[in-house]
Amino acid sequence: MFIQITRGVFVNKDRVKAVIPLNSVMAKQMREAANFSNKTLNLTYGAQARTVVITDSGHVFLLGEKVNKVRQKLLKKKEQDQQSH
Picture 1 (cartoon, rainbow, N blue to C red):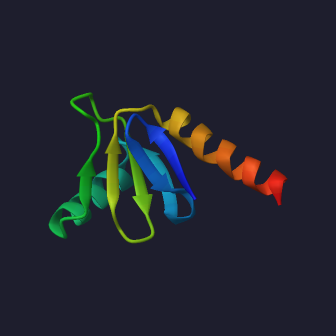
Picture 2 (picture 1 turned 30 degrees about the vertical axis):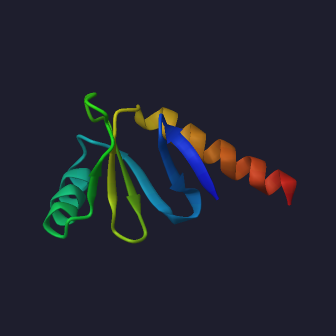
Picture 3 (picture 1 turned 180 degrees about the vertical axis):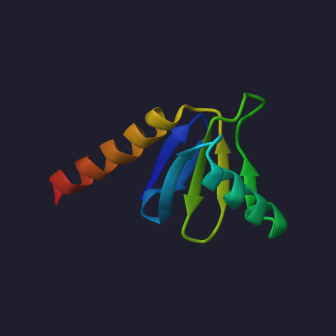
């Protein structure tokens, strides 16, 4: 199921493996690996990047939203799906 995490950005919530702050060591390593394989998507629309979303395919999304806000959107959708089943 696709959910909107920022303006004009939709992701398949089932494929999201991690949502981490941009300044963490893990985020830096994942960004470098994704840049090398051309799997980085800068979706900040000119804003300062704050959050890194990592998918199971190895794609790395850079977002201008705060980490907690992105996590809340993902968790809220997961909770709604669990309640509806």
